[in-house]
Length: 288
Image 1 (cartoon, rainbow, N blue to C red):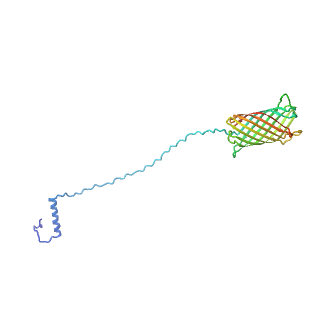
Image 2 (cartoon, rainbow, N blue to C red):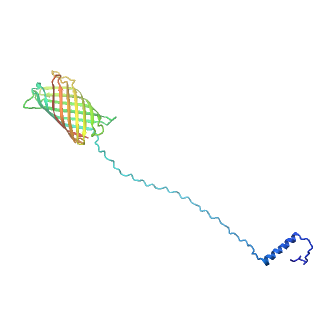
């Protein structure tokens, strides 16, 4: 330890704080230099930390998925196996019957034959029913049987009528059981050489048909004719006439079919005797 710069120690003087600091400074420098060399801390310059740039995410538009339409399968409709009701129904036939004409014609039993025609049109359905219109007629001629002849030559019986119909059953399909009724008006005429008788009046008819499979059908028909006209110079006047038909229809559901059956006709002249004729009738039936 050295004294003051003037080489004096001045040991009796009071030590000031400045002097103490000077002494401690020299002591620390001595230790630092000669006893424990402590490397001096040289502060390093910290690198400037640049912030990591946040990538700018450019939003990409969400692609709209392209929906490929699923093709609708070509499903062929299942054809209706049933036969729809045809609006037009026609019958062209031929009657062949044995007739009971009474003694007034000089021949009690004779043949009766000729063509018949019936045409019916069915209108569109309403309220589960159908309305229809019918036109019918026949041209029947009396013939000979067992070489006997009429006292009236060329005797014939003709009819012509019109009718309105109402169908209750079978209004949609021909393979359903059918039932319809009709109300109409009909003219009947007997004629021959120097002979002419006619009468007319309202008619009522009911027809039922029952299909059996696709090839046959059973038909039942009844028609009643009430006469209201009178022919002068004739003592015997027709009162009523009734026609009953029972038959079958072959190839019943086809456009063209064949109908055959039994027909019974009865009429009254206002007496106890009932006249008439019975026999067969065959018709070609066409529907479309």
